[in-house]
Length: 132
Ligand code: THU
Picture 1 (cartoon, rainbow, N blue to C red):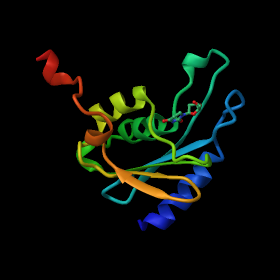
Picture 2 (cartoon, helix red, strand yellow; picture 1 turned 120 degrees about the horizontal axis):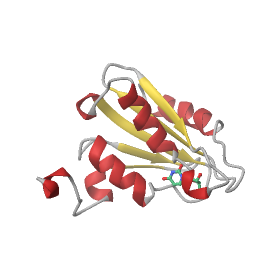
Picture 3 (cartoon, rainbow, N blue to C red; picture 1 turned 120 degrees about the vertical axis):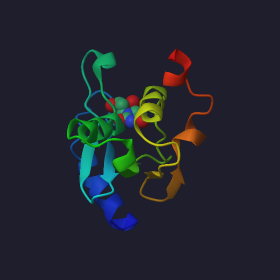
């Protein structure tokens, strides 16, 4: 899928955010190599800690449908904020586990696009190797 189309689609997903506490809409898409994709939006809770971020919802949906890190082509995360949204700490830890180190993570707001990956976003990761 072309990057422009992907970002448009993810802005549509952001409209599904359930975010009455923060009023901060986030959309995400886990794009798989076979062309399938899984959208996510942030879903908040009155017990704030029960909130789940958009990117976790998208990646969990891919995994729940049988996809694994080798199958994931890119992850896209969008916000309407002035600043490009960057994954929170919990999401970085989840992404470190569930997507490849060099898988493109496309971050966008209405003005700009930034492409990064989890090795850049989370150096010195705690992972399975630490437990072996
Ligand atoms: N949020 C995400 O969905 N992704 C992030 O990486 C940053 C934060 C959501 C969680 C919450 O619903 C709102 O943004 C404000 O923190």
